[in-house]
Image 1 (cartoon, rainbow, N blue to C red):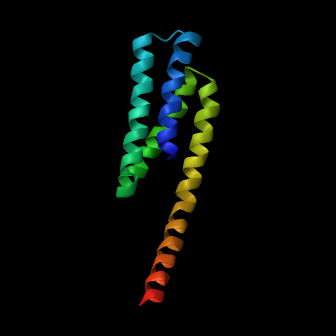
Image 2 (image 1 turned 30 degrees about the vertical axis):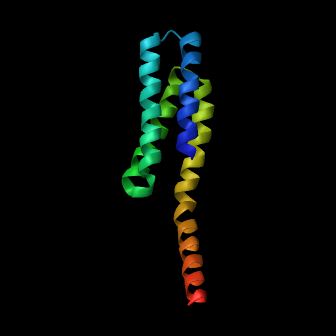
Image 3 (image 1 turned 120 degrees about the horizontal axis):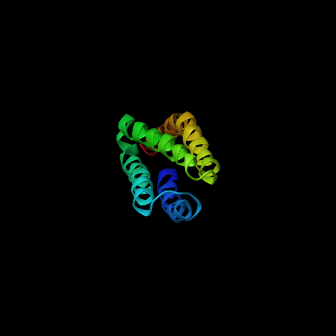
Length: 110
């Protein structure tokens, strides 16, 4: 979910980059589109394990790099990066608790 929303934010930041900085329209859309595609790919791959987390992390670095052109993106991308790394930290624990609950429910039904 984090990566999906981040893709939208990045795409919405492209017109801002065009108006605020000296970046050309094509370059802004290409860069923003590339970051958005990384976010969408990462979101799609997250359930498949490590490759999804790697792509998501690369997307975070790329989004932070957009702050070079649009300084406000440093704040926005920083918030998303913080959420992403918190998710990486607590995600495995949440999955373990979920699996334990499901196992307990199966044992209780039997």
